[in-house]
Length: 330
Image (cartoon, rainbow, N blue to C red; front, top):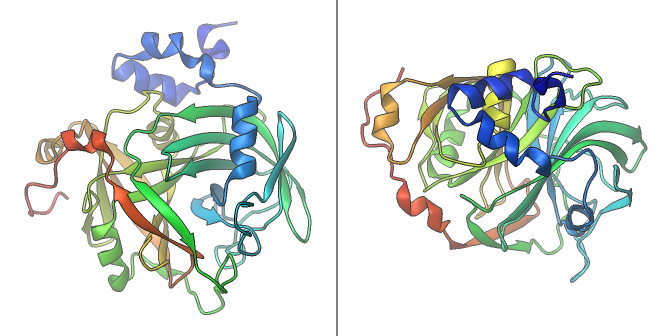
């Protein structure tokens, strides 16, 4: 086998690693990407009060969205996921947005999952394939499992909204072209968002699939110009899963939560890594800029069944700044 065939990374991820001169270093600690979940990851997902999913729609665009249990969990008992084996998760909930977003939610489809604890800054990721789908839930057959460091996660204490179902009604929601004007203020004030990405080819290779990841920064770190978003890419684990997927395909989904109100913005569009754009000099700490041209979005009022009081901005963000220049980047 070639080195690439033995690698847990697909060709575009390796290309990004080589471009940035870290491929050999990353290869030395890539053993943390496994084909089965270690016990601590299984326990982590089973205790999660919510998870973030990356799912494809019928047009092949990934959408990034939170998944909650069907009802608010009783105190001290938040889990709605079980793990009968180290390669399987069983989820007792269904994405309430599957019809609104025309999701291709069926057995055999690729899925990405991010579990995150905002109060501890822990997070773990899993990429796999949808197994069985029932009237009340679905299973996931795990293909890749790996952890992430706590970088850029803001500490929040989450509180469930009493008397509300775990997933608010979306009966009156609509998908619009671009970004609705009233949703742009949510983006401009955000310190956290989540991103789903995909590889161009989706086949039996576990490296080819859908991924869900987290991005954090100081409030206002995402710049909005019309229907295009720009955000800085900071130093991370150097796996470059998201950037590799963008280089491979470009289609992404974004989820912006408003933890003060429960509102949320979901968007789908096409991303591009601006490797040498001069705007990188306008944001302290940025190593490159990512631009996303939003094609469709939906703004969901009080969609999340919980709020989250900000306790602390990630200390790592002390080394980053804010956008220095108001002139357009396009």
